Image (cartoon, rainbow, N blue to C red; front, side):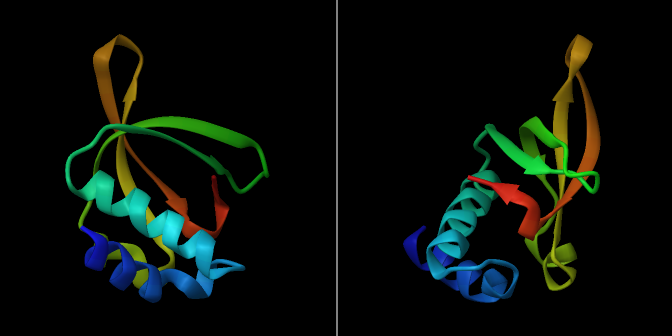
Length: 92
């Protein structure tokens, strides 16, 4: 898992202001890819902070080149919906 997180962080570092933020994002994405359900926060395009319970993500290679991640969020009534966020808007 260590090497996956570091390799991923090196691919996404262009969207973050520091290497430590890229590593945090890399770890988060590796955990999500491994099947962990995690709560994340990100700012949407209107700068509103959004919280989401992520239950799955799409393939990391799908949107990473363009700087976004697609994920499945658990919403009310145990329903799920596909959503996405831009990497640079992720809040730690």
